[in-house]
Length: 159
Length: 159
Image (tube, rainbow over all chains, first blue to last red; front, side):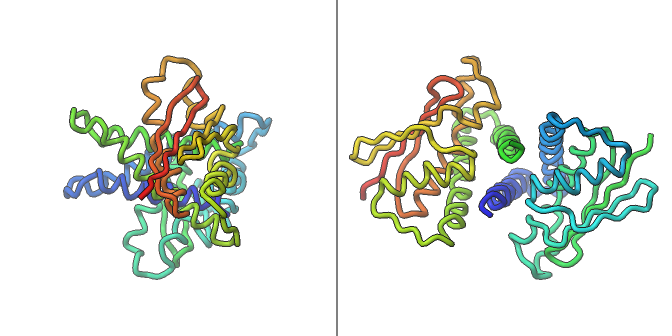
């Protein structure tokens, strides 16, 4: 219980500090989002490295890699698994968390819906970093369904 | 294993971001340390609130409060207890962690000893916030013994 609180509290402090230090410029509007994503990305990379280091797990395809993130990775970070995973089998995956930890701490009302992106940016980076370290390059975006439910859309980059 | 990695990685990102955003001014020398302490303080307060909320624990004296931080609180954050607690019974406590998580990630050599304060500031704040929320007002400073061992000195403020 307190484990997830530690992460949630730390995350709140990060969001608040990054926003403050990004300044209020028009130009800087998206800066704090990018900074948060970058921090998440590096943490996601480091964490997946640790997670897969001792295991002999090999993943037979992209879907298995995404499933690993939905189960093992999500459990380490958020103390629960992703509730629902959908894919169009063409490189788009939608991960739904019905009770997303970093939103439960804020509010379950509509009032803060506009504020939501800054609370999701870090996690988008986390997912992207984790997948990237497993050889899956992608873009990740997030959308709040109804507080505190949240969807992360992963679109695999084909090169 | 990966639990503590998450915290350690997050912490590294915070330290690096706060330092970058504090700038390089002479005046600002101590600023990033204060910012990190402040973040730790608030997280410490929130965490101890969660930790003590469901328990009926009452502490008979200051020493018991400090012991609670050394055991329960330290375990939640660092996945181990403080190794050694000393006191002069006059309001000074020295908490020693022989393998301090946030230093193990950096280096076990002397090389980074100068850099150590910025990796300890957040934890000084954590301790101060935790104790403050249990009614014990204090100042906290830290000292690296031999990497990665670390001592936190708590001096109770008598008012």
